[in-house]
Image (cartoon, rainbow, N blue to C red; front, side, top):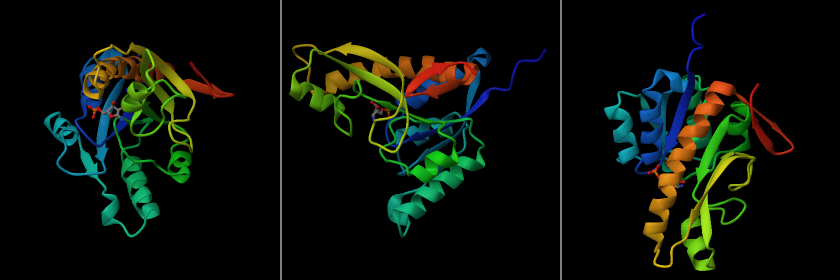
Length: 206
Ligand code: GRF
């Protein structure tokens, strides 16, 4: 029997794209069960797009300021994602929220990685807020995006200790090492095994 076709991933980025790179590297192994079919961004000139171009992956960019309304931007982003027939959309350092309409269109198959242990420290400044609070451990969370800010059902979490001499850069860099491993392992499982969500509990399997 032939192997099932690899799951189609569309990855959304806004920055350096190290999480994207980890997925690209993992997808080079046919046994991983997924491939990145397109990379989308909300800005030009970022390393995340350069990584996609070097890997020969199609890219698209939609800047909010090029659209009359946020809703039009969101629809344009959704249309570009849809063109690539994604099985899963991975927001990997994508610094924008998408609408309920976007999420519904893709049947809840949109995940995000966040550099904190949800439900602590949602939003844009997870590592800084963890440091300011004085927590001894923080980490990263992979979740299925819902209508809120970093509130969706949790797929996986990894704990990262906070060191006494950490600043926000050193802490975020250590979280990102854990984040890349978490993303690769769990996106692979979602691709190969499928997943269900019941009462917020995400379970692998069909
Ligand atoms: C990650 O820590 C992500 O969770 C956060 O921004 C970082 C993106 O890193 N939102 P990269 O662009 O994948 O290198």
